Image 1: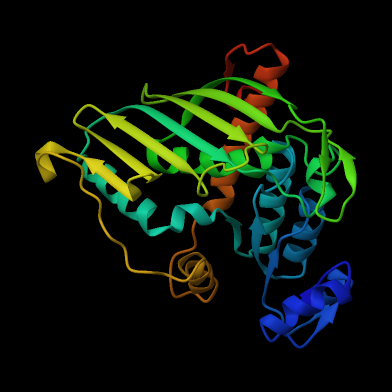
Image 2: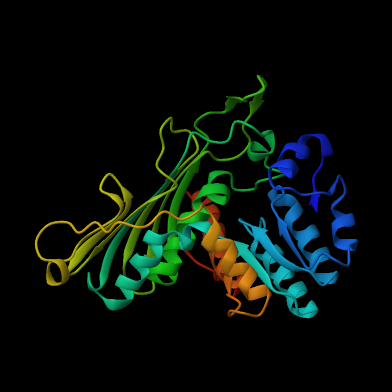
Length: 314
């Protein structure tokens, strides 16, 4: 079943994936006894209401990032899922890319040694097909919430907890022209620069933009360690590593077999729902990420002053 605000607009998507039932009220999907799990990919400000209702209805949940607009909202969603005993996952598809899986394995092996510094880029021209991305009532933090959370999640997965943040955000393009010809006011940040200090002592620079003509391919991530360097999704390909002790001189660039986009991500979720694999703690990962997002907001509001991650929740 596909629930959307407009059944007419949803019809092509339903036809593409052979979905027989299309409705314009998401409550009807939760009322169906033959629906065991739901994917929630609605605007950010609707996540809490729908996710809590889905948990109460006993549905397993895959919730689009960002999990919600605030730490407190994320905590309420997690509490609702725990009360209902349902599986709650948050969609961070980048961590399932083959190059990220391999990079994490190599980092665990220590082939580049202790990581000293990280550079992360999340940059696109920005979505031109929906006005809600640029409304503060829908997306509190703009580019940080919509793009930056991907880089934050990768940083947390690969390098551990972020201890403190110093950041600035800005709206560099205050008006945007959408694909349908409308010109709208931009109420949220479209550009952000953040510096992170990790619990390990490593430092990171994170660049986020929704105003770049070319941007980058999903993300770019560079890791610099005491014994080597690792680049993901760069001009050297999906993954390139310079680790003399393992691969000798020069760059080693593994080749990955093609994988259907999103396949590993959704297979992992469904196997967890079916009990064939462990359920992952992605909801708590998303909560940690939102603590970083809120630290970015506080730091920017304080003219770039360093902010402890999670300090307001302690």
